[in-house]
Image 1 (cartoon, rainbow, N blue to C red):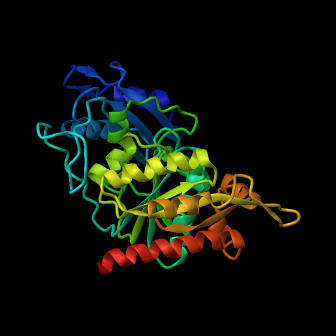
Image 2 (cartoon, rainbow, N blue to C red; image 1 turned 180 degrees about the vertical axis):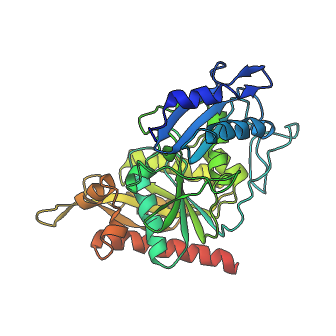
Image 3 (spheres, rainbow, N blue to C red; image 1 turned 90 degrees about the vertical axis):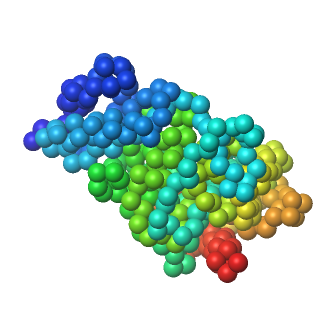
Length: 366
């Protein structure tokens, strides 16, 4: 059979009428980010200011229409909404809203996932995703069943870092999709659903809706820990995570330089305000290791993250060197912990993972 074309998909979606506008979703301009990869189709439906929970039927009908195309194996549809995000549930945490705020959204049910660890940073460019991927793989090397979620809707990097940039998830059932298996982990990213060159021009509430679906619409199965690679900063994605998901703790990534540490402090304060425990700080790019002579140079300063951890009463989880092999392996989709597990670079990540695993064990014993 010939390849499935976007025109075929759009034609099929013209049969899906939005009851709110009495117009098909194609003519109404509601279909966004359509991508066809082999037998797999993915796209988003923009439902404006409406509640996604009340429009699940629209998503189901769109998926059914696409699955009706000969040769289509799976259809993954995300509902996105521009409605005002309601204030989050307190869950014993400090949150905006006030006594007159409307009822909060329910927390997401994630059966089978024992722990959730967020890997975050106050600013971009500190290597947070590199740390998150290798931390997750290091936890796996310590005998844990690990999943990984890329929560960076605007700049998803997980598919490429894991060597799965061209992989599409398949349907697990009518309501969920299968996570992508990579290096023995179950993984999910909006990067699997959209072309990596597609700009995600979405407002905050749309991001919150998409992120919630990435958690709940994936058949994660039984996991000891789900590692969540957060976007940089202290915005909508972080608040969505705090208000709807039971996060066990956050790992903050920073470089040693002062400007990065200022933003790292903001990230720590944000998690503390919403009641998410801080597992500790990781100093990434702590020392440059010359690939020729093996000598180290502290390009960004020395010991800044450790000093900040002591100042804030947080644990210092360890140092990750700035080594060419770490960058080269990530660009090639072969994370160093998985591809060179006996290297000194992998050992640095594993040392951090051991401390994180201890933190999780302490929560079980508490």
